[in-house]
Image (cartoon, rainbow, N blue to C red; front, top):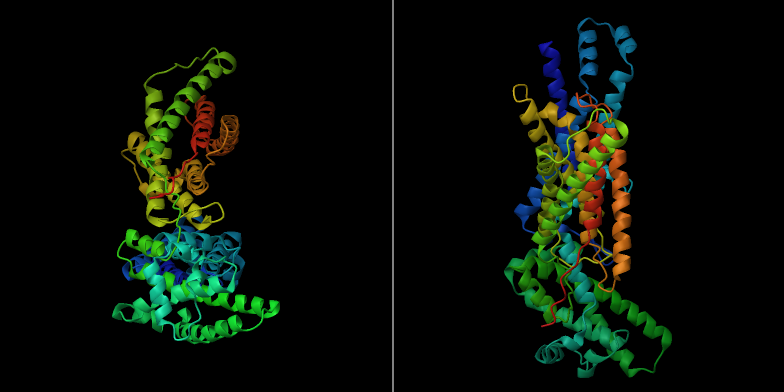
Length: 511
């Protein structure tokens, strides 16, 4: 038996190494999209942080593979069957012994390996990869800088910088009034390109940025050739008679050059800024108007969630007890408010508010940029759901098992047994992360606010009832009324939490 276990662990080790290799390849395959061009994300974060993200993703994938092949769909029966029949040279018995218990885990392991390396929008593991990728590489900051540079208004640029741009042009193709013209005109678009090119020139002479200019995907050589050619084209266009088709073609070429310039400059600004304040100061100098929608006073929201959880437990348990005593088992009445309610409050706060607090912390580190409704990151929301599931299940395991089963405590076995209690906290964490990126409209009326809160209350209450009926299906405790009380309490806790998930964002700084 020892040899079978040794081979089984060897198979698991080889599988974990293969998963880690595919996860490493998948992590490095991802590109962020700046405009129409893909860009390597390694230029937007420190190399140590980027490799920490790779290590985290590979470790997580290897751990999931280990759980899959060891606990959920173990490969041990298949390994034992193969070893025993090879030892006795019973190939016929080996074929006869292949059934669902031995083949399904093998298929599942192969499918998991395939999903780790499969580049497709239908692959659920890619959402997890992208969430971890964004949390460590922070490519969304580069996207925000890129968008701010694209939408920059040149009238906000310092006059001395405008004069400096005009002096350095080899061909006099720009006028001082071009900066104030409409953003759809050839004059404005060319002035915008000149400004971006001028700003990039300040980075060319610095040694630390040499590898960015040498990176083929950032196309610095093509940009220089295109910029010099475009200068002559603009002069010819200004001197010629107006022509609609030629104007449209020139605008299209200018827009393409603008995208390449903003893409390279976004990489330079993010890579070269020592702090985020310096980064946005550079963007502002270029005319970028960055409206940051950051949550203020996060601790107030956490206190609101704690209050909602406390109210949900107290109200939910007392109403459940009242219904139990009045209609279900009047001959076996339950006690109303007692110390059990306080224990439930403490347990619910650790189960729900603790992972929500981690969601706030992780979002602060992962999304230090503007978030608008059209810019949602579903990979991050999925990562927050997984984080909420892990934190809440761990809390449930430590609280319940150490409280009632101190002598026979096995963390892994207990964690697997308590995974059902982590489903609801995982869902609410994903919802909280999503709602933080969909801030409320300040013009929302009081009636609409109340109606949407009531709707969220009943929707999340119904979700809680469905999940808790599943989680308590095999509950075999002495208290026959515990299941009814748990389901009723969960309805109010999730209902109040769902109704409370409403965020206001910081007002833009107009100074």
